[in-house]
Structure formats: C-alpha cells, structure tokens
Length: 456
Image (cartoon, rainbow, N blue to C red; front, side, top):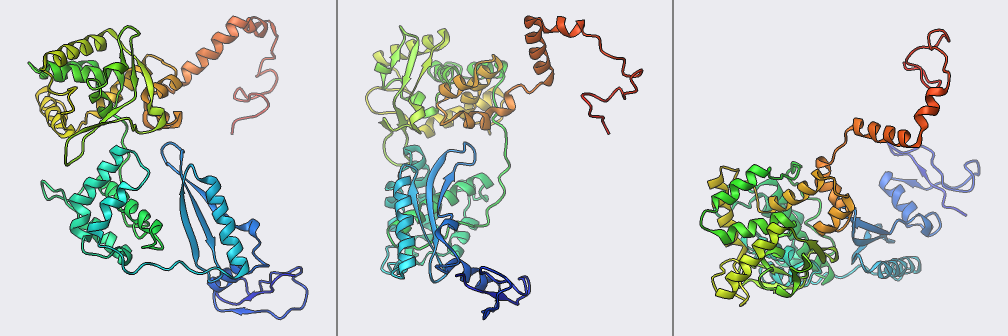
C-alpha cells in the first residue's frame, strides 16, 4: 500500500495522490509546499523504494571523461543528504557504504555525523591535509603554493570546522598576484578554488566538516583556448636566441623532440639507465619535482600510470643527449645534474622568458608549448592518434582529442576522395557506370531529389 498525498500549494498538482489508484477514497495529507511533498516521497520507506535511489555517482574529469572518484549520496529520514567521496579504486567500498546508509535509514538507526568542534586552525591544518590526499606530486606542490601564497593569509585564523562558503568566497575574491598585486586571472582563481576544495575534502574525511564549503562558489568564467604550437621558424628563432647557452638549447631540442613534460625532461641527466641510445629510445620512469621551498627531488611518481612510456628518439635528440652526457661527465652541467643538486623549475622558467623575449615571441607562452609542438608535428605527419596518445602519456585518447582536436583535419573532401579511392580499387565504379539510370527530368523528378527524399 502506498502513501496517499494531496498537495494544494502553487506549483504542485492540486490533487496529487500516490497510491494504487487515484479513484480510491483516501484520507489525504495536506502538505505545506512542494518541498514537503518531495521529502515525504523521498523519505517514505514505502513510497520511495531503493531502486529509485541514484546513490553511487561517478565523478568524471570533464576533459578526458576519466572517472576520478565515486560519490555516495543518500537522503536520510530527516530529509538531509548523507554524502561521502571515495577514490576511483574504491567502487566496491562505495557500494557497501551505500547499502550501509540505506539499511540505517530503513531501520531508523541512522544518526547524523557529529562535527568536531575542537578543530585546528586552517593555517596549521591545510598543508598536512594536502599531503594526505592521493594526488600526483606536481599537483600537490601547486596546491601547497596556493595555500602558502593565498589561503593561509585569508583563512589562517579560522577554525576548520567553522569554515563556511562565505569564508571561501571572500578568500578567492580577495586573492591577488603576490608580485604585482593585480587580481588573479580567472584560470588561476579556478586552481585556487580547487586547492581549497582539496583541503575541505580532507576535513570532511577527518570529521571536521559535513559538506564542502568550497563547492558551488561564484568563480569567473575561464575562456577556453586551443593548445598553441610553434612553427618551425619560431622554434629555430628560440634556438638562435639561446646564444652561447648551448645547454638550454639542447633542453629545448629534447622537449620539442620527445613531447616530455618539463619535469620528465629534467630527469634525463639523473636517470642515464633509462636513456637507451643504441635502441634509440627513452624510457620515462621518473621526473623532477621542484618544490617552492627546499631542493628539487627525483621521484618515480609520475602524473599517471600512462605516463610510464617509451619514446623513440630522433638523430637531433640523440645528439643533444650525447652533448649533455659530456657536460655531466666534465661537471659543466647547469640544468641537468647527477649529484642531486637539480635546478629549480623557476630558474629554468625565468631563462625561458628571457629566450622568448630575445626571439621576439609572446612571453605568455609556457615551456609546455614545446610539448604541444611535438604533438602538432605528429598530427601534421598523419601519425595514428592512438600512437600520439601513447607517446604523449595521456590518460586516454579522449584527452588527446580534447587537447589537440583542433589540429586534426576535418576536411570533407578528403573523406570523399578516400571512399572514392576504395571504390576504384574494388572496381565498383565500373559497375555503377554500366547501369542505365533514368534521366531525372524525363522521369519527372526534381534534380535535388536523391534516394526518394526531396529537398525542401
């Protein structure tokens, strides 16, 4: 038997009943508004069976479609949501937690989580919280920089359990560039919001918060831009602008000739065992992490599992590597060293800006442009997209098309020529020519009518 309900509020049906029959006389329950109706349906053990619950939801990366986490959301007997986020490898655990919540709701034994009121200050909690999250090291370091440069200044004296959406919004609105004092760019603000959300996610896991106050903030629109690649003459201008700094020029050749991420390229000198010149191959197994504080470190933790890959080497790249190996042997290496005193990424980026300026190129270009240049060269040469995705170390081919889709050819004429060439090889054109087709005018057909479908 179902729960009979009648709603008389504006926006709801004046006679809405949930039962085996609308014609059966029942004693309707008058609800105040639509929210009460929704709660009555959702929380009723009879009218809202489990099969209507969409509790375990995959949280996907918008660019790649890759599942990042699983979120469990179940509405409980008091009308409030009980939520918890699990790692992408913990789908079974998320499903078990969902069943646990539903059992507690149906038995009436569920109690809301008690928030810890004696929580630490944000300034003391944020950095250790980021260290405990399961994310790659480069991303962690970027989040740590955001916490040190912006978030501690705005939220440092706030107790973690007292963090509100107003606190988070004010922190983002008041953040400025530490060097110029100008407002942050929209993309930088979005990354700052992500850093704050990661800290709050850990606070939820630790019982300091029930919900994430960094979600649903008013963020500026980020203009989507296509990946920018260098033309051959622009890359040559960069090499010329290096002048006597041949080591930096070789670094640019290696990145543009392999598509390595900057940290992966800086690990060349420290991982000679992975450089197989005889096989003309480089095995990506390590990268250099350059923290804002302290010395750079070499780590086997890459961006993702797909980042572990083998890259074929050209003659130009092999020559650059051999020159670098000679510098390492003589102790003259400045950018790649094998003694642990690796250069910080900031120093290399400053040198990059100087070279851009000397070459007459936009100083807004990052060194990642060299990686885009590598991908662009492969696409222009017609290399298989799956092979490109593998060489780039992308998580999936979806990421490849999302990043470089604008560089692929979408010419309809090429499609027509390809299909026509197939028919020619199959001899189908001879069979088609041998058939006698009626004249469209004599047959009384519109010349635009094809296959029985007339254009309108």
